[in-house]
Length: 217
Image 1 (cartoon, rainbow, N blue to C red):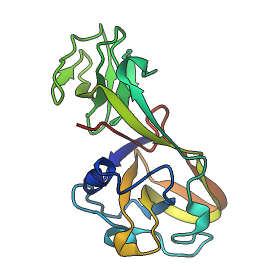
Image 2 (image 1 turned 60 degrees about the vertical axis):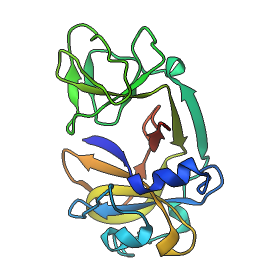
Image 3 (image 1 turned 90 degrees about the vertical axis):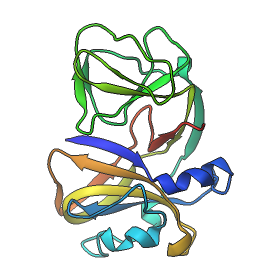
Image 4 (image 1 turned 90 degrees about the horizontal axis):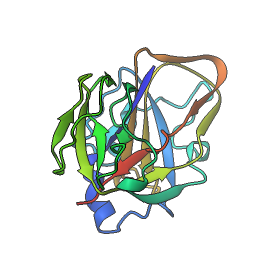
């Protein structure tokens, strides 16, 4: 089972101008089936995707307080302080690394299905937007000199009965569906997840990437 995190692109201007303050906003995580359809390039508000969310039932409640993120932390980390460095082994799309010898830049894996790094560390491109491919075929996109990361405690859905869980989506709950901005989409790949008999289902942010990373500029 692999997990990828994708930023909803329409939210970026609200980060840039301070309209959304992630540290104080009410953030919730909805769940959707693997058959749901999301378009991160154009979906903007909860109203755009509410029909994709699981209906209330089976222990699950739409837009519930229980779906709210707790212990929210927003941090900015400079590239050379990023803890995860390039290494041989498996990577998922969206994971972020820095070179073992820091060059003040961060890189993210952009292979849609991830990949496995082998051999020696590559020579890194140093232009934001440039890609570097290592000898294992993993493609690394240069994303900038620092990252803003949103993290929190895991979200637990208690005693739910759900089948074919394929997505989770993070959004700001303003109390109005048409103004509740979508933040990031969590995609579960490699097999549908089942919670078939009133089980606790837990969704956790990646470490160190959190629910998403944002590199301004």
